[in-house]
Length: 174
Image 1 (cartoon, one colour):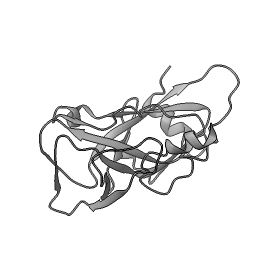
Image 2 (spheres, rainbow, N blue to C red):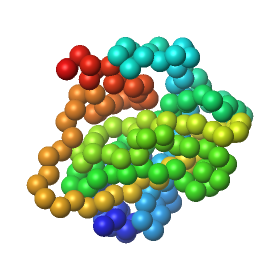
Image 3 (tube, rainbow, N blue to C red):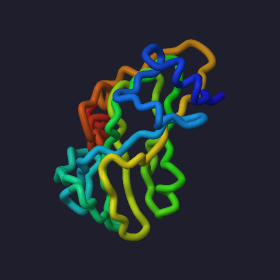
Image 4 (tube, one colour):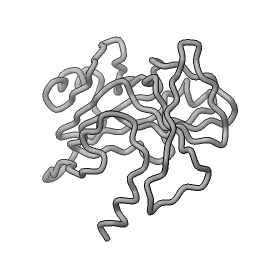
């Protein structure tokens, strides 16, 4: 089952943390998360799964930033979230999708116990001008059945900002 907006509000401060929280961003069964003003792009065309890939930081100015097809932009939410006893899920807002903009390529599924900012994998079908602070995606929460073991990976837990892929760490552990 998915939590309703009123239940999300009721769980705030205990099983759900969203900081900063704005009641105007609460929907009937989700909460809108906003785009931060920084992006990362990979600085090399060819990426290697077994190595850290270098990135460059972009700032979204007040007049917006035109992003281009064929390029992956890593962004993050303004909001820090924590989720206990529920599975957080992330989806792009329909208004964003109708511009041909994808907010996550594959990483919309969160883990119970995740704490941090959501890294967004942004791509577009045609050029789109984006703006910091826009409600870009929505978080919603699924209930769980069975014993709960919270996420405790050192890779992405308690992040402080945009995170490029850390897949290379999986190769070191094998």
